[in-house]
Image 1 (cartoon, rainbow, N blue to C red):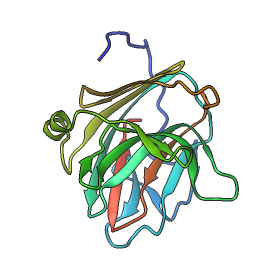
Image 2: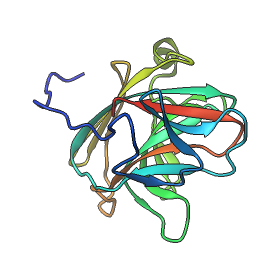
Image 3: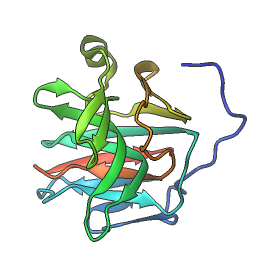
Image 4: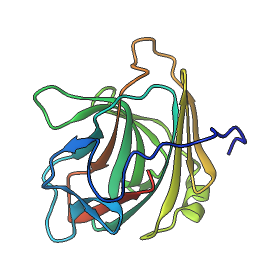
Length: 189
C-alpha cells in the first residue's frame, strides 16, 4: 500500500452504539465491539444497508470485516446515496464474498446504478490472501476519479472513473446481501 498516510484517522463507529449511522435495525446490531449485519438463524429477504449520516468525498477508509454463514456476500458502499422510497443504496461498493463461484473480495461493484462489476482483483492472489471466517483488513481510498482497494495489504483495485456524471461524494454504507442465513461483521471503522 502507498506510504502516503494521513496523520490521523477519525473513527466512524464508537464500538458501542450506532450513533452516526441509520438503517433497518432489524438487520444490524452492535456485538463484541463490531457492527453485525444479518443473522445466522434466518434469511435476509433483500439487501439491507446501514449508512453514515454524513457524506464523504476524498478519503481513506480502513476497517476490518468478516463473513460467516451460508450467504457470504456483503460489501461496503461509498460515494453512495439512498434510493428514494426504496431500501436500496446506489453507488460504488467494495464487495466481499463469493458471486457465481468468483471471489469478489475487494472487487469494485456499481450498486443499483450501472449494476455491474467495474474491476476485480487477481483471483489466485485473493484466494491466498482472504482469511475465510476471520477478520480481513480492508482499505478503500478515493481521490478525485481514482479508486483504490486493498484486502489484507494486497491491492485488488486501481480504478479511474471515466464517466463524468458519477457522484464523487456520498454516504458510506455497510451491506448484508439478501439471501441465505449469514452475518457480515465490521469493526475498527
